[in-house]
Length: 80
Image (cartoon, rainbow, N blue to C red; front, side, top):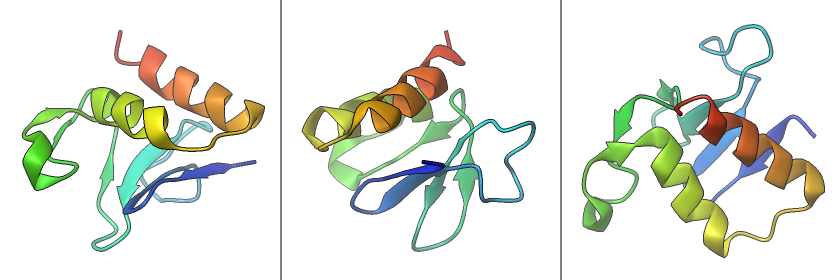
């Protein structure tokens, strides 16, 4: 599994901003990519936060298999 899909976002390595197999958070509507330490507004009601924090929040309500959970954990660890 090379991607994790959320409602309006995706964690993927299939984007030009991804390098060395590191996942980036991509906003589907615009194609903009963010690393774990970048500041994003995932949804207007969430306000500004680190991309890694947005992924943690999205993952809480997503149905992720083991691979998806591992991808989320790796992405979030990169900002620590």
